[in-house]
Image (cartoon, rainbow, N blue to C red; front, side):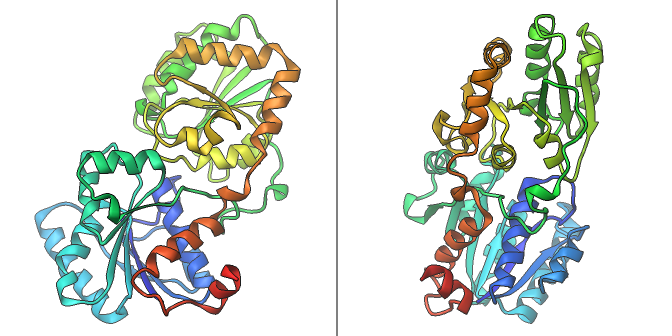
Length: 364
């Protein structure tokens, strides 16, 4: 099968959409398919090349002149590569894929990664629309996407070619007990609520430290909040870390306090590392935590509820250890291999005879 993935870029900046697409492209090429990626480029080009994935330069910047150029460039890529499948992971890519589909024979697949964005409805222009969680699928149906065109492929990142195996990482030198989040510095990631919750419990647990791993446009706001908290010496801004596994291995409690989060990749990574997990009961997060069996769920944007959950874990070593163990159960479904197989099954709705030897072996 000839598969073309369309992305805005392939930069190594912790972008979950990019990570999912790069994982798919590499494993598909490894399994014998002809795979290419069209994007404006980035650090992952070297990784793609190692797996035999061809990269086409495609600048989809949303200005009139650049979009006209992108349309002509996309037409040339399609003519040269002749894909069976065009898999668009972002809005501009699916629009390009639909506009020029009439002159080609490929099937157009889209993946809805951030359904909370208003433009996500345009992902419905594809022949098949992949939702990264059942919550996302229901949201897209409510926004008018026909259910018969939707398929659910939950995100999974374990076994990614972008990372080493977990035993190859050394735990970071953190002060314990350690509470950690790995997230972009955006208000919607609930960083403000996490800092407030930590401030609420810090005096009762003076040995506890909070580590914020990630960068983003709202970082200065959160830094100011931390400085005014009275416990700023225990709050650490670690910036973007390309391999956050070392932090997770040294972490007692992992927190993801997002207001919205369709299917976060960081949850499988925290589970594999054996962290006790506290996360928002919103969007695809409950599915990633086996609906509360693998982690504590709290209401989003509620710093007091978050503080109560943190207090529960920090007050009892036995409870903390039990939730650490719970996190590591049922990890098989969180693998990249499973994501790939379910995605290929959708491709094969349009190309039933194009199955690689490795795919046949895995299926059998």
